[in-house]
Amino acid sequence: MTATQVARGELAPLMADEREARSRPRSSAVTLLSIMVLTLFVFPSNAVIHVVGGAGYVAALVSYVILLLYVGTVLAGLHHPLQYHSPVRTALCALWIVSLISYVLMDRALLNQTQQTGADRWLLQMAGVSGIILVASECIHSYEDVRRVLRAACWGDAFCGVVAGMQWWLNRDITPYLRDLPGFTINAAAGIYGIESRGGVARVAGTGIDPIEMGVVAGMLLPIAIYLAMYDKHRSLPVRWLPVALIAICIPTSVSRSAVLAAAVGIGTLLVCMTPRTRVTLLAGVPVAVGFIFVSSHGLLGTLDQYFFAGTTDNSIQHRLNNYPYVEALVRQAPWFGQGGGTYYFTTQVDILDNQYLTTAVELGLIGVVVLAFYLLWPALAAFSARRLAMTESTRDLCAALGGAELAAVLCSGTFDSLSFPLFVNTQALIVGLIGAVWLIAHADERALRSARDMTTNDRKTTWRVNGVSVWRAPALNWADEPEGGY
Image 1 (tube, one colour):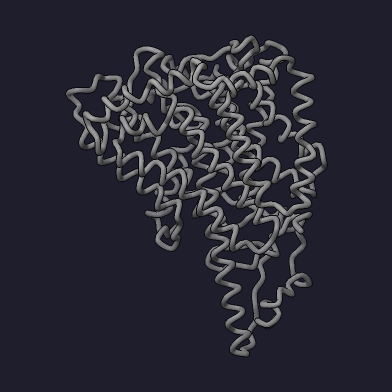
Image 2 (image 1 turned 90 degrees about the vertical axis):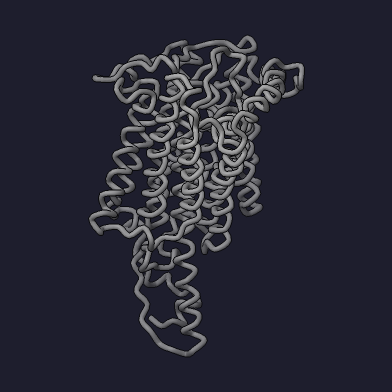
């Protein structure tokens, strides 16, 4: 095959069958990340191994194993991280640097034992997050493998939706059985959220430890589930759209404004980036969803409307506004690098900050707030950069869905203390890692196409090897990795 043919995009006659590409064995990275995300949604994170503490829940243990395997492959010479230049790794390194500086500088004489334990737990959390981000960004080499991991995440959150639905409609909670694991105990600090009430309607948490956590994560994953439902046309219609419906259940049943905002930002970003025809089709489904909520959950829409338009008269909003003078006084004690990651300790409900940026200002200082904003926002910008280089409608929408999910994380970190909740921490880390993967794949393909065009310009003949999927360092153009329905 000549470079001229490649430059013209005449790859279709030589592409491997899409079913053959999908049937290829999944990589070990896909398997490990899928196990991590499924355990995250199936086993509540307040079930922990006692000797490890709050960072010893099932999904966290899997993430530590992932990091150890990553380090082992690097030391054994099987993986070469310096070959990968990903923007998400830059964001992760920035957060590590400020966390370590704060850890070294914190005044342990002023911290009680609980706060010092929290500082150690923060570093453990950073280790687990690092394993997820590094493996997802550097060890996943095709768009199809990215979709495989996202399918696992969406089915995991769908299970959470089933549990939330049982709590909401049937008043039945199965999470005590899910927490009953050999060798695990209940983390008293995390507490147990049962079936409670807000504004006269039930409020549930599914397999999360708080309704806000469940709702925000569902809002982040909903646009990804919609993307998969649109492009996984080799699967049946019910199989494609069932996760969308089950994930959507988590949003209203959480009775959380943050959840609605997360869904609005994530889906809104995906809609803006779609073609007009697809956008109109998806918008047509909004009245159906609202109608279902109205019929099945009487009073819920009125409650949400009341909370959204209550303004400063709402107790929750008043509480958040009153936090600023209190936080200012704490920040003045250690303004630059804070009192240490994970060390903010409250004794009463009044001292809960409900804002990750404020919590970070106390724990990692003003420099930490800037770094946290960079850690959350930079991957979203990387996703849109990858979208600009993507060669198919399918991959462009994939980047938009990931970017929208990360933008939702940026916004909602200002409405609750997001990094205190394991569902959010690990889901957001997975999204960041997969953004790194699509960024590397998109840039590899762009370099391959540019090289082909250069050969055409120089009138040189060459043979082009097509593998059927994109492979880092030996990339095939991603027309070969287009799922059915991509155009």
